[in-house]
Length: 114
Length: 114
Image (cartoon, rainbow over all chains, first blue to last red; front, top):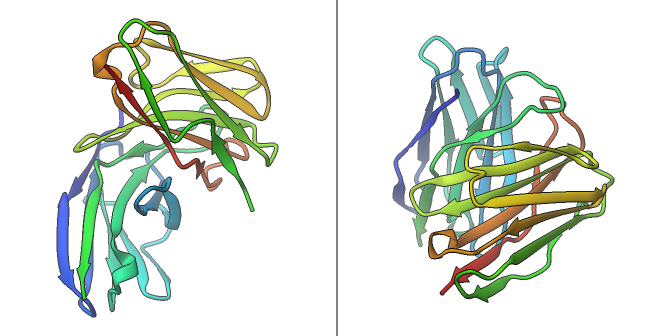
């Protein structure tokens, strides 16, 4: 089955710097890759996603890139702010259908130092 | 706004007790999920349900069962709680099985088994 590895497990950056979180997946049939942000005391929330037919997607300060050949995808956060501090999870799934499910990475704790 | 609510934020139970964790969603979603979240292990799928009375095992179903008698409610049952089931439990719902459908998470229940 699918396996998703996520690195680093913790990341500390200065406010205003960029942060990059990387994930690799094992199932070449995976074609949907969402990123979730979990703030303290809350459940994860979708922040951006990408399909396998797209190489890059941006939404203001966040972007996701996908390299299908290498089977890895990354989250990029520019101009980080203290409110970006959270745990970030990547995930992968293949296809749709009633039993379609996400396989999550192990999470990255991002700390943005003011 | 989609709302996924969980019956308790914190729960303390004793070994051997039967434990019920309740989850309710208010958006008529077909799919519902139960995950457990442990440090360094990310989100692991316990069970999911793609329709009323339908359920499917996730990656770590041992020691758990589920019930979905109504579309809006998905219950996780620990038949005989054990200390290794101390964890954060997250419920999620999704409109259907389409690839791009977003999963919406509840705030989580932190269960401690003594």
